[in-house]
Length: 138
Length: 387
Image (tube, rainbow over all chains, first blue to last red):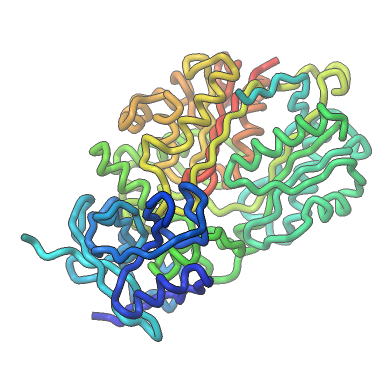
């Protein structure tokens, strides 16, 4: 398996807990303390009711594929040539919100919409990233 | 209900050559398009007192309306730069021009966009090289998403899964726009395309192939607006803006609503209601075609086809010249050039004037121009009518 590449995020004060949790192997999404809305991606306010009293909910990390694409062009530059083709996925998490991620593993190339996936946290450089892999059958 | 029920009309159109314009800068391209539109309307440069533009994506500039005003040699009473996204930017420019003229800020306004996105991009860049950020980078770049092809590929794969559509549905859009481009002397793509050509083109981001993607182009397009009575006598070619509908729902693909809930349906419903029309009243369909999938989604959202049946409609010949709703007779972003959709609007005006030559749509009275920016993030639908 080739070494994975990832472009580092540049977290804000509001999003740093998300990325810090990934480094611990946890997927945390923000949740509104007022209306209970669970959402992605992290912001300083609830996009449903506007409240700023937010907490974090640990996600199961399980979900299904809403859509996917196998990428054959190194849009992020020549260093990505060795990653090709790689698979980008939109994952509908079991708790509701959808997130964009990358699907890794030898069976990524045969993924289909609706397939079950689960989060993994590979270390790339000085961070761990919330990528997904196909859930074991059965 | 948003309406544009004024006596402000599109009085002139201007286009530069498209494709490769080595030696031309973005401001020079925009100036050439404005001068062409002024000439077309019968105005002198000194008549221009309103200027609305979009700065280049490949080389973003601040204050680009004043850059262009100075370069042109005018001192407008109203100037602004608009960046809403895709062809919606062009519609918003027209809206700004109508409002500026109606409210007395200016009498003759030009709306323009153009740049050298093809010859001006850095060596080795892939596709449209945008130097500006779109705001979702923290939640996209770490996962390998960069640029506009991958988000549209995710939309296209969802479309195929949702409706059981196939690559033949996507290909049909590429093929019809190429047939039309062959009738346009000012088009980048001049060779016929077959289904075999389409299927032989390389995968970019599945399910999208190279021939699903619009072009990267140098070139510019401009429109000149004024009141009917202010237009030079005897021209009589002003085209009316009957309605503009718009809807913004999200920005990044992760927050994109599912296909039936995309904003294009709301934008279209507003435009149809404001104009008191429906798809049956339209003769020219200039739909934003940054990717083949964009057309299928737009056809269905705007009521030209039922959900999942856009491909069948295109394959039926309905969107060909001679069909019920000819699609992008100029060749569109897929086969003429990608000038941010400005040429969808100039082509609509040309068709409604009856000046489109061998690609003229018979009996063209009303054109629908649709646009979207981002990944159907901002959607717009505009109905133009022959005087």
